[in-house]
Image (cartoon, rainbow, N blue to C red; front, side, top):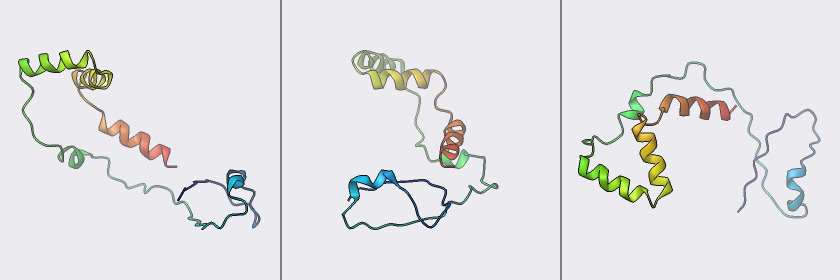
Length: 103
């Protein structure tokens, strides 16, 4: 089953949805949900989220050498090490970006 998400302001009982052109003539299920704005009282403290991370000792110098050697051949690992060396991810910024993208 393929899902298509269409966000549209309903301004009439008759809708024009060009996104559904490929489905004309097919039987589909249409579900319409009214969007509600995010709760204004959403908690800003994400310490509960960070507390879910497993407790782990920092890597030893030998482990860091091994990681850096492996990162020379793995771009994703190199990027992750760069983020870690800069202090890690900013969970608050990620939460704000996700919240803004859902509006």
